Amino acid sequence: MEDHDKSPPTKDYYKVLEVDYDATEDLIRLNYRKLALKWHPDKHKGDTAAKEKFIEINEAYNVLIDPAARFEYDLTGIYEIHKYTLREYLARFKGMILTCNGLGISQSFAPW
Image (cartoon, rainbow, N blue to C red):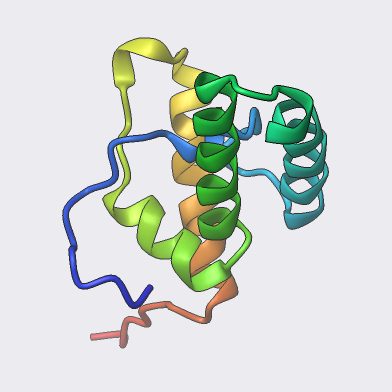
């Protein structure tokens, strides 16, 4: 992400797109299309809340569909622990671990 403001995000983009933390790109894309169609401003003329929701959906999609941006978001994103079950909370870390391994980030230990 080229953004110079590195403050933590204030929105849970996974919840915005109604996907789990370990969602595939295909599922993210599918839910994005469904929600973008539902909240498109042309379907809600004059409704500023719908327009804001549409902008939020686009913002979430642009971050989660880009592997590098998603990885950075996962490292700095909000967790809102009180809103999730243990399974949902751990699924977020599962996604981060899989993303780290997918990017070839690993640490090897030499035998002593």
